[in-house]
Length: 312
View 1: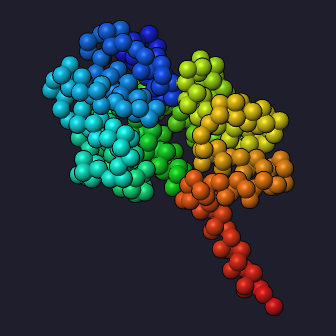
View 2 (view 1 turned 60 degrees about the vertical axis):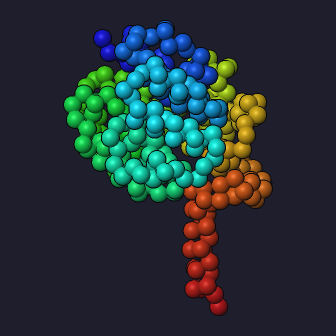
């Protein structure tokens, strides 16, 4: 039986992990799962704890003794925990990775390169090489590298490359297309393709996810609401966008650059840009290299060049 299938014992915890329900993931007891799947459960739990900004070092130490023979795996998670716990800007471990030997190493190294080194090209290279070299069972069951790689191509504005990777799933078993990762990728690409049917399909996917109980996981609920906010803006459904903003603010989220960027778009669409200057200053203080700011800077530069060219 497929452990990740809808009747498998890892189905719920995997879906909860990839939808940001980290409190639920960390609350499981390992003995709720069969021995063969406990290491994967522990991975989800350790990563969830780190994502929540908490220290996972003791769980990593316990894992080393409980699952001997997985030194590389726990060394990786220890390096990842150190970055999150101590705010280190670089890591001897990740700096030493030039090619990935296993799935999680490929994923976390790529995220490290993007988040802390701003090197998207090298992250894409590591993920692409890992995927190209994967064969057989692993290629069809290790989907997180695809998730990160598609996201990075989209960040760079390379929709063609992202869509090409997604289309490869046609050659995968049907079970791969039932995976939450496949569904997330599909929603991203539908929203970028545009047109109301595509955007609505993406919206319904996230709206259905929101029906899960997120009371204990406000971080995950915020992320889904922020996606729904962006999709309603694409559809120019301003009243619905206002309702989502109210739900987001009720969560009292800490500063989030993407939410600010969406809020700037909302201001242009609904209030003639009344609060845009204020929001732009806040966005710049939180993320001076945010794509929205970069795009505005480029457009302003082009406008200035036109003004100079036609100045009398």
